[in-house]
Image (cartoon, rainbow, N blue to C red; front, side, top):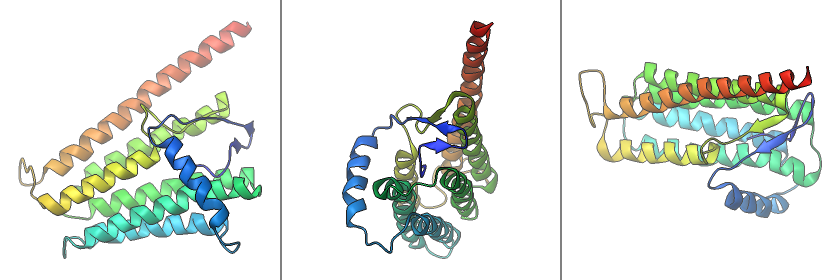
Length: 229
């Protein structure tokens, strides 16, 4: 999800081991030379944000009709296209702007996840507190990735072979389940449905993963600095 392989401190070692990484990279490399010159990395970044706005609208309007969830799914496609191609195109054309790209790309990532999850929370399918709990977990992991980039020169883009593209597929699958099962699926009480439990468990995993990664990285840094003494 990055536009470049460097932050303000220098080159980064990208760690991307998600299941779809190789196939996605081949697809992006095929698309890049076929994009017209007027398509720029900045325009693609903006298109990714537009996709997130479409997702937000699809979820927020789904109370009127389940058919709006198709709009949310289309928004995920738009968001993937813009977010995945902006950095790829910059590297393909050799027009990277490392500091600018790093700052804008990751600032936009935070806005995108807020739009997607708050839109989901505004629907009848997922409670807002569950959606925001998941947002917190995602942002905490993002913070960890940015800190690790600074102190280890490593940028981790996947966990357990699961990265941003796999997350989009998971959310699209969840959205299809919403369309098929309706807002009352798996309801356990007046306020909680099966979708709430799904998002809540996912949020708990994200937050636990942040705690675990923080402990692992802290231990690694401690050993590295003790070895210098």
